[in-house]
Length: 197
Image (cartoon, rainbow, N blue to C red; front, side):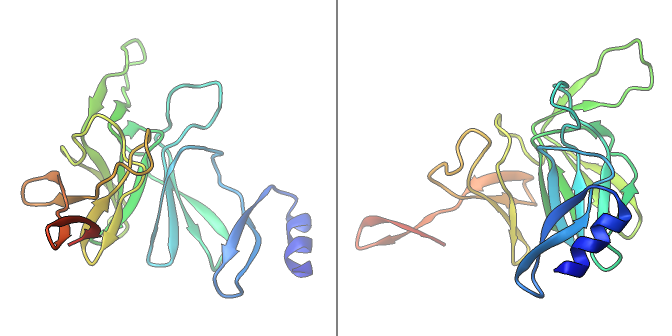
């Protein structure tokens, strides 16, 4: 631990705590290039990806920036910006790509005189192999943003939103219909159960 702390002092830059699974202890790591809160975060191929969020408390708008953390080199690298600004967004790795989901997002408009255009229901998807963002239309059509989305054996599930951590049900994403459906509960002797199929 002493060597980690002295390395942080020598570099003379802010460091962020992270948990080391190798040693089951917290240590310091490089700080994000862009300070942010309420951002999407996902892990893919041993690297941590962050996107969106708010960079200042005073601003009600999100940011479009994204970064990837290389655990071995202890450094954050900038990624191409997303097509939209997003905050209070959720990140999930699915099918080898990073998905950033948020109900409302604002297009980045090159014409500074025009107003931002609010869009909804789509995700931004980053492909680490090509280094490009693309849009996934109508991935989240519910009115309230998700709290979390997880990949379980290639299927996406969500159980809460930004207003309520547990909605009393689990929803699964149907990739063919491009919509979320409630997962049926297992029934035991005619009674409802808290178990899911």
